[in-house]
Image 1 (cartoon, helix red, strand yellow):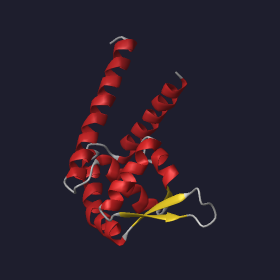
Image 2: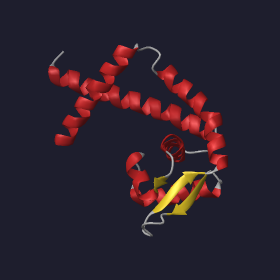
Image 3: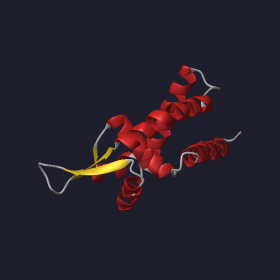
Amino acid sequence: MEVLNRNLKAVTVIIRAADAIREVIKSDAASNGLNPTEFSVLELLYHQGRQPIQAIGKKVLIASSSITYVVDKLEAKDYVKRSECAEDRRVTYAELTDEGNGLMNRIWPEHEAKIDELFSGLNDDETEAMISDLKKVGYQAMKV
């Protein structure tokens, strides 16, 4: 196979795999009354604790203009609360409420098992190699 065709095939495989994974995550989130963006914000707060709202968008790869809307929705569901920074009034934090923490304690193990199932066809070395290879492609894409 010609190099160009092999590279184009690799792009197609990466995109299809990413789309399939995204659908699993979307379905998993929806089964818990969330959209994927809400789920990713809850996951970040669950694993890393209180975060400045301004930083959440970068960490979960959503537009900063959307983060306030997402936090508003999670706040309305009583999963997240806002708190002001005592040192800098320009900074507002988001953190899980007891309700949000309880939700994540309940749904995270099942979600993690589902993700593990997605990668069950790979051993640890293959998974590490895939991570390394995809990072190389991603870094190269940022240069183009």
